[in-house]
Length: 113
Length: 114
Image 1 (tube, rainbow over the protein chains, first blue to last red):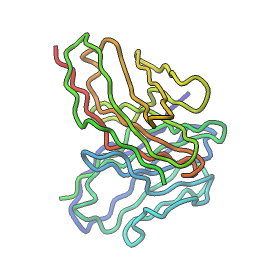
Image 2: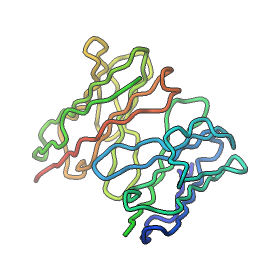
Image 3: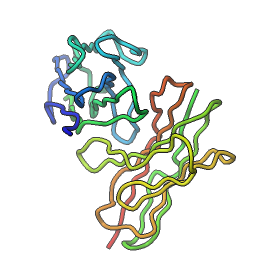
Image 4: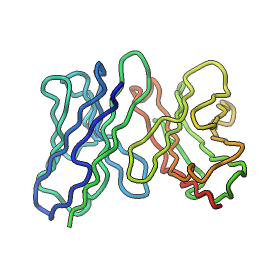
C-alpha cells in the first residue's frame, strides 16, 4: 500500500512570497490533516478535512493560510504572503474511518528568509 | 481538553542499554494513546498505539509501552537500543473529547551512543 505523498520536500522562499504544498493521502482514506511542526515542537493541527469538507480549521491562520481538497482526494495548502515565523515542516496525514490512527507523509520543509 | 507531557527533552543512552521515554497525559475522558518516531528529515511513523484491551502494547522495532490509567502514563520502553534508534519520539493522545485528533507532546530526542 502506497503511503502519504507530499511535494515538494523542501522549499526556500523570501518573506512576503507565496508558496503551495501538495498532499496525496493513502487511497481510500476519507480524512486528511495538515500539521505545522516548528523546530523543537510537536506537530500542531492546522486543518482537518473529511472528504472534501472542512471539519476543523480553528488553528489555521486564515489571513494568510488557505487549504482545499476539491475532489475529496488530494489537497493543497497555500501560504500567502509568507512570514519568517512560517518556517517549519508541514506534514500531511490521512486516516480511514475504521481506525483511529493517522499515517503521515514525509513532510515539506519550508524556510522563509 | 487533552494534553501530553513528555518529561525528557533529550535522553542519551549507550548502544545495547535499555531505555524508557516518559509520557504523561491529561484527559477527562477515555483516551487513545500513540507513540510516533521521526527520523531526521522524515515524517512521523507510528510505533505503537493503545486503543483498548491489554495495557501492555508491543510495537515495531522492539518497542513496547504500558498504559497506566491510575498514573495517566504511557511510557515507551526498549530493552536494548541500537544506533539506528536515534530519532525524535512523540507521544500523542486522542479520544472522543478531541474528535479523535491527536494532541502531540513536544518530543523526546533519543540519542544512542556507540
